[in-house]
Image (cartoon, rainbow, N blue to C red; front, side, top):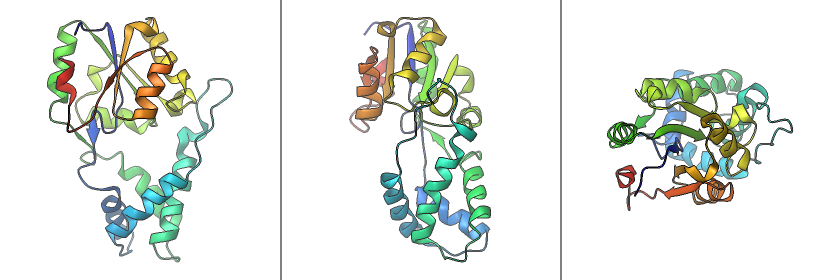
Length: 219
């Protein structure tokens, strides 16, 4: 296909992934604070907590979410901890350790084709960006993965006050690039947040669905 002038990428499960499950990470952090935990139990508790969490509010003025969405993550971790960790856990210490852990080098890994695909698209003249339901920790993660310099703009839901599939986040990205929404392509794996959200905002979409396809199909 003809290379669009602007290509926007989702982050988690599109550019990068966790080689270990969330439960394994939560259990490893628990061990660091002196608590023995079962990774499988924590993984199941996290999934239930994720489904139970309310959607984050859309800020009325287009400003950032309070405290970079940290309070929302705190509530999610508390739900999981209440189910899967001892009641006498020092939750404040545990949460701060968990929150910092997911920004540490080596926790996330780029999919193997990512670097080549981004370089090839840039060589064809495409300008690249990220549109993610993430917070400012993503900036350091992309840098650790050697990907930060590939992107002209990284647009985060915590900074624009709206999660995908809300159109604001896509509109903000296109405005930063100075392009009409019809001239931008959004690449992502989630049928609602990425595909429906971007299409409703007027962008073209690339439906990433591993293992049926990966980012090499963009080339």
